Amino acid sequence: MKELIIAYLQTHRNFYEGVALYDQFGVNRMLKAQFRKIGETEAIKKTLFEELRKLAGLTEMEFKSLKRVAFVAAPRVVPIAPKVYDDDQLLALAYKFGITVDELVSDETAEKILSHEDYQDQIEELTEELSAAKTKYCQVPEAVKKTIRFREDFPFLNAPDCPDELKVLVADMFRAYDVFREAHEKLVNMPDNASFDEAFKASQTAVENYLDNREMWDELEYYKEKGEILGKAECLKSLMEKKEISALSDLDLTKQISNSRSNISKAKASLQAAENDEDKAKAETNLSKWETRKALLDTELETRK
Image 1: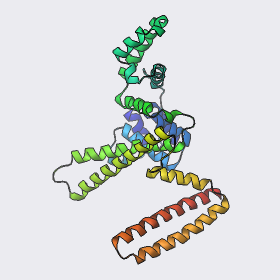
Image 2: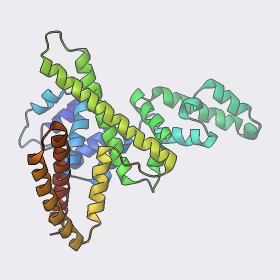
Image 3: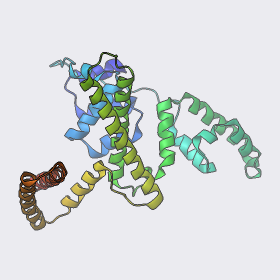
Image 4: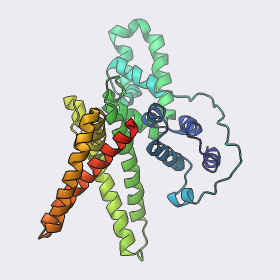
């Protein structure tokens, strides 16, 4: 696996060949679906290469310093035999009995199921099925077990009417956790003679990504309970703003671009007139908000030309 991925990253990095590699070796089903559904964009390509980097066990520095080889055919992704487990099958069987997959593969649960009067005419079939499920689950990597538990916690993610914003949020949530984990590990292993700036940067990265991850987790919990988007996570705010802008008429889009210019001018004036740190911070936040808004509006206008 490592050799195939590194060979791919050293060549032309064709997006769809990279997706095929991740389909073969990756474990995150939601990312696989996202790569196929959204297709080739700069943001998605960046996520794909980052996931492949981690699968190959490359550090960020090793990835950045990889020597690209010109005029060499990209590695062929050789089909491999089907895995000995199927998490969809495990989830379906657990759902059939109204239990979790962890409960499904326990000997105590198997005994209860097989002793239930409703299943006495299916003893032989169920015994074989439960035994196979337990064998499969024992062979599942821990990363896949976590994915299964995650899908059980938030089953609406597989529903046809699940908002696309939440599917993108999940990918961002996993990525924030990975960044947090790497930064935390770096902090734990940081030598005593490390510089203050290095330690501060790692601490800041760990804290910010941990908070981002928890904020996105709260979004999923809220949707599970209420059936609607909370919209407090920064990544969701941006996605929902883009969706709102894309629904504007051409006339309204033009009006909002003009309005954004006016608000940016006002925010700059407020920043220059700020007399204390609190007023300055408020003005900077307001300016950043309107500059971001105008950038999104301008991007939408360009796509319509």
